Image 1 (cartoon, rainbow, N blue to C red):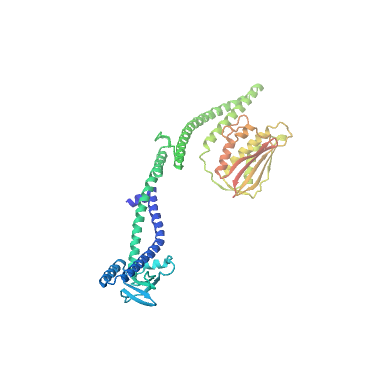
Image 2: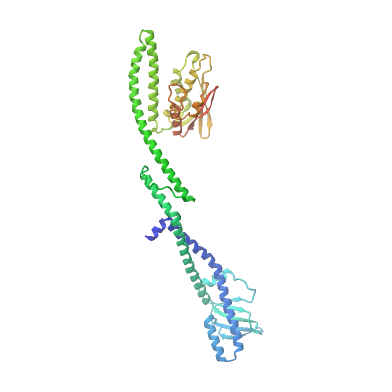
Length: 469
C-alpha cells in the first residue's frame, strides 16, 4: 500500500529517483575506490612485513621473535614471509601453501594503481588461490621481501569495504531524498495539488466561486501557473455569463422574429390587394408597402436562419463544383437585371474538378456570394456598364480555391472592417450582414475558408477554399 502511494505521487517518485541516482553514483565511485582499497591493503601489509623484518634482525631472542611473528600473522593474515638475498630465499615465518595457484604482485616497480581487472578478480573470485607479493626490504643486505597472503582474506576485506560504502551511500541517499522530498512537497507538490483540486472543482461547477483568495505572489513557473489559472477562471465565468445573456436574448429575438414574420406575412397579403387596386395612387402606395414588408420578411428570415445554423454538421461527399456553381447562378441571378442591365455569368471552372463538400452548405455559400455581387452590380445606374460575375478555380495545397469575381463598385471601408461579423458587415440598406458570416462558418465547418481577396472600383474578389475530392 505504501509502495503504491509513493509510486503514484510526484514527490514519492522523486524520492525513489533520488535514492536510485545517488546509489548509482556511489556504484560508479566504488569501482576506483575498490582499486585504491586493494592497493592500500596490500601496501599496508607489505610495510608491516618490512617493520617485522627489521625487528627480527634486531631481536636475537627466539621467544621474542616467535611472539612478534605470531602477532604479525594474526594482524596481517600473512601465511609466509621470506627474504631474498643474493638470489636465495630465506624463510622468516610460516610455510609455503601446499596447494592453489600463486598470483605474483611485484610492488618493487614504480608505484601505480593496479589494473581494474585485478580488482574485479579479487572481488568476485571464489578459488583458494594466494597472492605472492614482492616488496622492497628495508633491511640492509636483503633484496626484497616475499609475502604469501590467501586471496580470500583480501576478498573478505574488499567486500567489507563495499558493505560500508553501500550502507553509507544508502544513508546519504535517504537523507538527500528526504530533504528533496520535503522541499518538493512544499514548493511544487502542494501547490500543484491545490491547482488540481481547483481544476476539478471548476470542472464540476465553473460558475461557483470556491475561493475568493487571489493567486500567490510567487515569481516562478508555479506562480505564473496560478495566475494564469485565476485569470482563466475569471474569463470563463465572464464568458458563461455573456453566453447565458446572449442565449436568453437570442431566444427572445427568435420568438419575436417568428411572431413578426407571421404578422408581416399577413400584412403582405393585404398589401398585395392594395397594390392591385385600380386607383393608380393607391396601387403605388400598395407597391411601396409590399416592398417594405418583403424587406421585413427577408430580415426576419435571415435572423432566424442565423440562429438555427449552429447545430448542422456537414455531410461531405464528392461534388462536381462546376455544375453546382451553374445551378446556384441559375437560381440566383435570374432575379436581378434584364435587358442591358442583365448580369452575365462566366463559369471558367473545369467540369471535371471534384471537391469533397456538403452540397447544401456549399450551395448556400455561393448563393450568398452571388446574391451580394448581383445586388452590388444591380445598383450601377449606367445601362451599358459591365456586369460580369466570373468564377474560376486555382489549386491551393490539398484543396481548390474558387475565385468569385464581380465588376461591381466595390465595398465601403466600414463594410471591409466588419465583413465577417454578425450584424456588423451590412453593405446595403435593408441587409443584416449575416450572409457572409454564415458563409464563412459553413466553409470552415468543411475544413475550408472564405476570405476577401480584394475590393475596389474595378470590382470585388472573394476566395472560397474547399478540400479537393
